[in-house]
Image (cartoon, rainbow, N blue to C red; front, side):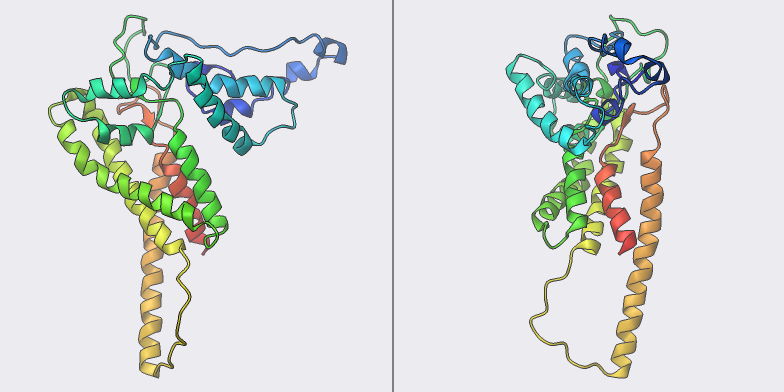
Length: 307
């Protein structure tokens, strides 16, 4: 099941599947193994159409292809994603439409209103596969007009932000540029729900997006706060003056109160992140997407808990 594209698993999942790693392959003799000519990736098409088929096939098939032709010890996921970004762009030059239909589908769902706030949410989520949220047997004539249909199987934005967050927590002083990019993105998320609300009103296609939008705004606010916790203060220009005992006590109490508030915030945020990390059940109510935006926030929250 490691190469079924219709499950809409991330490229990292497929890349981790060794085609010769199962018990049947282990039983092959070297002579039998030498006869294996290649592998395949499967795409069941009950829930794809002309607008969505390319986005369900590409670019993840490129990651599977690299897995099939690579040695078993080539497992660097970050390196794979770095190469996949280039391949993803080059695929457009070949005529693949995996990106081209994304915005037009969002425009159609938004109706006669600007779809920019909807795009902010769509960039931060990942579509789920296997007929989620639809009753009965899916058919090729089923209209693909839901938010999940427009969304991509993997969020390129969340991948980039997660890598930035990892670099930043490893060396906050040396990666202030990454922190600045993260902060701008978090500010965009935090402000987006207010901009999306007018689109949701009287639009049944967007009703299921409203809870996602609120979760995304909350993540943006949490991300800003976590960056504040993790950003090293600028060096002091003057030598701090000696405080009286009363002032020292007051300062210590303020520090203790700030630390208590921080721990309370982290406890709440980690509970929220655990909720967002839970795999949505197939066929459950909701937009049938996962909010990939939680991943860079989780990196920052884990670092803040250790500080």
